[in-house]
Every structure is written in structure tokens, then in C-alpha cells.
Image 1 (tube, rainbow, N blue to C red):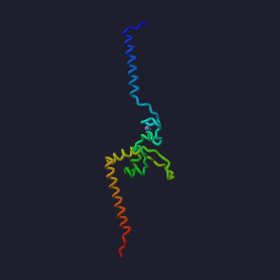
Image 2 (cartoon, protein in one colour):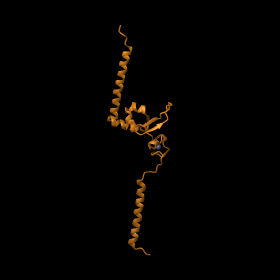
Image 3 (cartoon, rainbow, N blue to C red):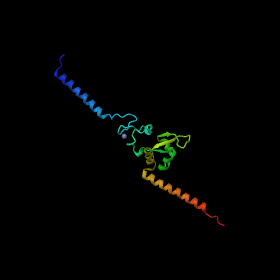
Image 4 (cartoon, rainbow, N blue to C red):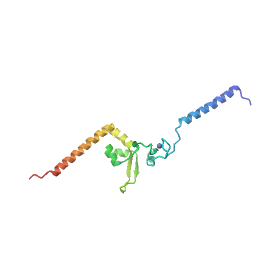
Length: 152
Ligand SMILES: [Zn+2]
């Protein structure tokens, strides 16, 4: 069988088109990273973040990925329990020997929730100061009554 020049040209064009597509496809797909490998450098990822589906090594882990206890979350971000319950968390064995496991939250999620609640982290900071002052005032008043000498 003998191919005409037009047929040969079409075959060649198809071949080039297939090559181009393959090359583009290879460029478009993200670099292959597996679970347990840092998304930045491919090194071993921090296993404590694996249940959040976050794979990043200790070096590339930012402070936003810190894990924070519910108590710290409530104090630092003034978030109520109901809000914390909506956030993703990871359960850890309680270090103080309590039977109930400790829940840890991502700073990233807490900041996001606090921004939603207070408008911004600056507003959160202002609210924290306000509450701190109010609590201090209550303590002062309590101390004042405690030390008051009974009038005779
Ligand atoms: Zn890394």
C-alpha cells in the first residue's frame, strides 16, 4: 500500500498533535506527591497533621498549623464550645491521665473561626482586652469585700 502525500501529512500532523497534548498534560498535572510526603519538598510529613489531610514536613510547617487544645482555643480565640464542635479536630490521649481524650484544633481553623465571629483578629484582640479588664475588675471588687474590716 502506498500513502499519498496528503495522507502522510495528515498522519504526521496527528502525531505532532498527540505529542503536544501529552506534553501539555504532563505540565498541567501537579508534581506527584504521595500521602506522608511534604507538599513543599517531598520530605517526610509531620504525622500529627495527617488526619487533617495536611502533608507538610517540620521545616515547612507554619505556625498556622500548630495544634491547640480546646481550653487554649477558648482563651486565645474566645470561641464557644459550639463553634469548636464545628471545626475539624484530632483526638489525643489526655496527658493528665483523664479518660476523655483531648481534642486538638488547627490554629489555621481557629483564626478563621475567630475572624468570622469578631470580624478580624484585631477585633478579637480588643474583645480579649475588654474581657480581661472586666474579669480583673470583678477580682478587685471581690478582694475589696473580702478584706473589708467589719464595722463595729
Ligand atoms: Zn518540606
